[in-house]
Image: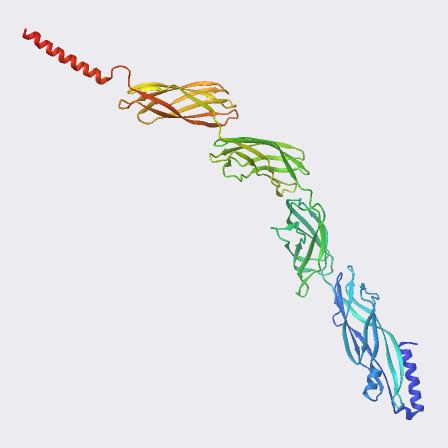
Length: 533
C-alpha cells in the first residue's frame, strides 16, 4: 500500500495504539512531509529547447509534537526523487529521474529539467505530471530506550503548469544562389512566419560561418528589414554574396535569426534557423594563339583568341587588359566580346605602345573577363596570364648617302639610298630632312609608295649651302615613317646623313670680280697711252 492510503492506514493504527496506551502516547511524535511541486518560470514557445526550473516545497504535517530532533525526523522527505513526464503536453522531456535527496521543511531547488517543445505545438496551458517518491518516518516513540521509529514510503503524482505562448516563429522554406566559385552573385532566402502571432519591426540577419563564402562587402553577415510579419506569411530576401576561388562545390551553411517586437512591444530574438547553398561550378575562360609583334620603342600589336570554357553562357563580356609594366601602355585596354556560350570563342587585338626604356624580355599579360551572368549580375573572371615576347629595338632601314657632297654657296641635290632590312613590307614611306645653318632647303620631303623586304629606294632632297659656309664634314637629320601591313603608321627611324661641304671647283665670285677690276684698269691705262700718242 503506497501514498495517501498507506499514510492513512498507518496513522489510524498509530492513533488507535496511542488511545489505548496513553502512557506510551505521551512519548510519541507523529507527522509526515507535505510536498508541493511548482515552477515559477513556466512559459515556453513552440520549437524551443528550454531548461524548466522545478522547485520542491515541503510544508510538513505534524500531528503530535515532541522534541525538535524527532519533529525534523518525521517531517523530512528522505531520498526524494522526482520524474517529470510530458502527459498530454506537446513536449519531450530530456531529463530523466532527478535525485533531490533529503528535503526538510522549506523549499528546495531549482532543479533544471530540460524539455523540448514541439515545433507545431498549439499555444495554451498544460498540466505536466510529476512523479515524486521518497521515504520518511511516520512515528517516533522516544519513551523507550532506545527510541522506536516507524518508517513509511511515499509515491505520489503531482502536476506542474506549463504555458505555451502565442509567438512568431520562423523557418527557412527555400534558398537559392547564383554565386559561382571565385565569383559574385545573389543569395535568395525565403522565410515563413510559422508561429501564431505577428512580428513587428522584424529584421532578418543572415550569417555565413564558412570562410569560403562571404555576404555583402566581404562580410560574414548581412541584414534585411521586414517590418510587420504576419503568421503564415512568406518573405523573400536577396543578399549579394561571393565565393572564394579556392571554394569547392559543396553545400555551405547559412544561419538566420529574426529580431522583432512582440504584441507587448518587448524586443525578442528568434532561435537560429539554418539552410545551405551550393556554389555553382566556377566560370572559366582560356586564351590561345596569343602572339605579339612588340619591339622596344615601337607601337605593337597583341593578338589572340579567348574561349568560354564554361559551364555557363555569359553576356556583355569584355576582355580587359591591365598592364603591370609601365613601359607597355595599351592604347585601348578593353575589347568587347558580347555574348559567349560555352565553347564559343572570339579573337581579340590590343594595340600597345612599347616605351624606349622597355627591356627586351618575356612579358606576362594580365587579362580578365568582365561579364554579366544569366541574372544580369556583374562578374569578373580569374586573371588570365598568357605571355608575349618583347623584342629589342629593330633596324628597319640601312641608309647610305648616294649624292651627299655639296659646294659652298650652291644649290644641290642630296640623294640617299635606303634598303628595307626588316622582314615586314612597308607602304607609304615618307622621309623628311631637318636642316640647320649653313644648310637650307625648299624640298624637305621624299616619298616611296612601297618598300618590300630587302628592296632599295632612293630619296632626293634639295639642299642649299650658304655663301659663308666653310668646307667641312657635317650632317642632316632624316626622319622616316611608314605604314605596316596592319595599317599602323610607325616611326621607322631617325638617321643622321653625313654631308661633305667643299670649296667650289671653278672661279669664285670674288675672283671673277677681281679679274674684272684688273681688266678695267688695263683698259683705262692702255686707252690713256694711246690718246697721248
